[in-house]
Amino acid sequence: MIGNRSALLLDDLVQPFQIESMAAQGRFVRLGKSVDNVLTAHDYPESVAALLGEAQALAGLLAGAFKYDGVLTVQVKGDGPVTLLVADVTSDGAMRGYAQYDADRVRALEASGPDAVSAAPVARLLGSGYLAFTVDQGAEHQRYQGIVELEGTTLADCAHAYLHRSVQMDAAINLAVGRVPAGPGGETWRAGGLMVQRMADGGRLQRQSGEARDSLDDDAWRRAVVLMKSCSRDELLDQRLNPDDLLFRLFHEDGVRVFEPSSVEMRCRCSRARVENVLRSFPRTEIESMKVEDRVVVTCEFCNAEYGFDDDQLERLYRD
Ligand SMILES: [Zn+2]
Image 1 (spheres, rainbow, N blue to C red):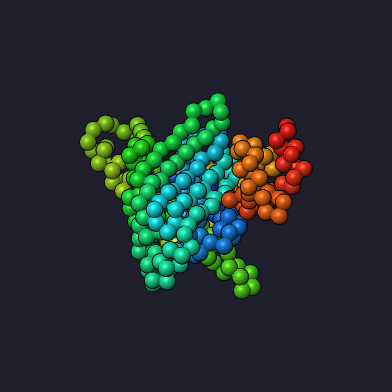
Image 2: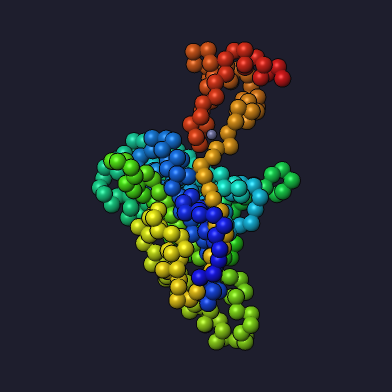
């Protein structure tokens, strides 16, 4: 294995790599605190938290696949018990997410049996709807958005469909999320993901052209996908397993090169100034009608932070 590591970054990371003999590149995402902080900021039912954790891991994988300077958002809308999932990650590694759901419908689904959700999480939890990827690079750049209908058993399946159809990328994704023991009697959420994508030029420009090369590349690509999928849930979630060791274990026969990893953390971008801007965009009468005990309180749906405004503060808001 080639590659050097400037600092010991073992958790909450995105690790790019390249399989040398196979013309594939990929990323390994491992989320500890960055996913636990998001999922425990709200009292989500187990199945909703798990799906949101997967969406976060997916956002981390895709953030590495698109070169951007701004915010990448994964948004899933459905007509099932879960109506909305949002996970976003900035190019400097700030990650957050939230889910909207119908608590009664989720409870009924979870109560209907242990495999009720796991057999077909997308169909059971989200129903029909769509998956959208948005890259926002600020006012001076055009916003990019790609959308696909929800098709497939898992979020990873839906992402494959998107990558294949919308950006003509051959890619395969393996996602895992779950609670693992942490501290005395405690548990913590973890998520992990692996993605391989076929390199456009096949990485084999030096070889002669022709059918033989193409079929060789096809075989190599299929092998990369099989090896990537052989990575177990436990391996994806194990905090003690060094990312280099995991990638070496999977791809050592074909040679794997790791590049500099980048870190991610749960960090919300909400602020009092942003909330004030949103409030100002509504008519004052509407804002006044939100008052509870003479205060308007706005709660961030991502991190649950509360921003309170009393009469004096509202007065100033509308005067400025
Ligand atoms: Zn927030």
